[in-house]
Length: 370
Ligand code: NDP
Ligand code: GDR
Image 1 (cartoon, protein in one colour):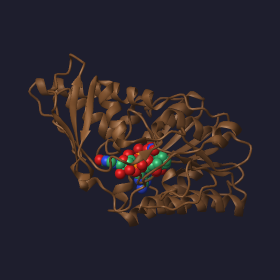
Image 2 (image 1 turned 45 degrees about the vertical axis):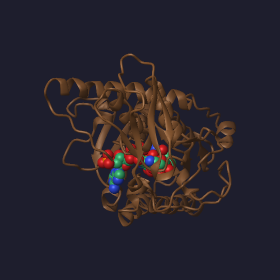
Image 3 (image 1 turned 30 degrees about the horizontal axis):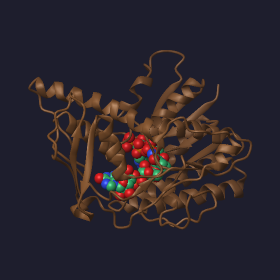
Image 4 (image 1 turned 180 degrees about the horizontal axis):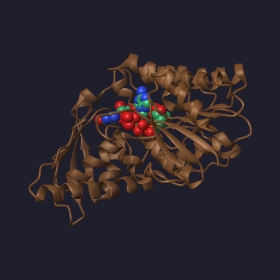
């Protein structure tokens, strides 16, 4: 039985990857931060009673900023594969907590690599590093591939740049099997609520159900190459099964504006939007509503721009070229953007219908507007 250690197990990718590896027959160990609430919603369906025998899913307390904890855990677990997914992963928030982001995302990666080296596991343990299309930052060339130069545009991206190169360096210096997956944006129904896609699908569902009036967003012109997280975690595993340790771009090769994503989300529930105005004055209005379940007034303003969501430096355009992964590893994504939006909207309508029932029952519901 292969043993995997996943940092960031409570996150979107950690949850999907755990499920994927357990199905493949792995024993999975996850690193979980201590928090004042359980914070295990995404992996609750995988939880196993610690008192039963033959468990194959284990959670361990730890933190990417705590070297001795990481060394002890890796010593105990003796993993065949480490997936380093833990990170302060929000680009905008990284401008507010840059030092912490550098510590967790940049030095955190060094701590994992060095623990493996210190424990003499260089030849046993394969390491996957969650690198990102944010490394490309300011547009140098499109589409972006493994040979496109980096130009990071946020403390998050700069921290991830250190993580990228320290992974390459440990591979070259110590012969370790350590790879970067340069993943473009990938989303799902369990995407964090403050990333733009999930913010949009949640708000769309709430607006359609009459639980919220409108949504405030930032840069509607930003373009992203959005895929489905399920396709991307499969690729993380494939990367570690390859004969040679290398770095790989994972993307769909298509790009879409935030504005068009909004239109697609509303379209899923039969609401057509039109946009008027420019820049900070741009607004979105209901043009038509073909779904009798939702009773929105034509002309209702449902979207406005709030500059508080603008970033000090923005990444305007991401579109990836995953030819290497397609041809050398045979990775082909199963989901298109329209399937992703459908999946996210179906899930968020259900989630918000629950809120609606709670409200109808006389109980209070709360929505953070972030
Ligand atoms: P999430 O934000 O959903 O999950 C991040 C995980 O990291 C959570 O489990 C979080 O724990 C954990 N974490 C954060 N800080 C620490 C810390 N100091 N110590 C231990 N654990 C910590 O991210 P995703 O699942 O979306 O992404 C996974 C990885 O891939 C991240 O490294 C991200 O930067 C990278 N990435 C993501 C892409 C995407 O589009 N999703 C694209 C490219 C790269 P907690 O639940 O306690 O907060
Ligand atoms: P990103 O994802 O920064 O690409 O990082 P996010 O969804 O936060 O932003 C995408 C684009 O949408 C614009 N935008 C908004 N973003 C947010 N969060 N909220 C808004 O209201 C809003 N309005 C417009 C942003 O300006 C941006 O251009 C994600 C993370 O998962 C990273 O960890 C990962 O490395 C990269 O994807 C690839």
